[in-house]
Image (cartoon, rainbow, N blue to C red; front, side, top):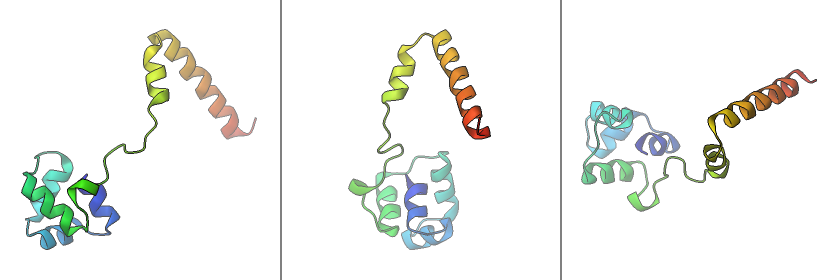
Length: 97
């Protein structure tokens, strides 16, 4: 969430860290998932990027998971056959056949 918000704000890690009063290595560790920020640190980072916790973009927001659920209902062999058909169709489309 922090990486997405920072990039949308057009900030580097260093700029975000300076604006939020947080060390840049901390921002890097948060973005890499090495550490989870405390709530107040998260709020400061988001505020420094011009966002609030309530309106921060969520990873995967707006993703239609219908196809994923449909595929997971299939048996593995069915998924493999479908993947092969789709790969062949993609190749034909890509090569203009």
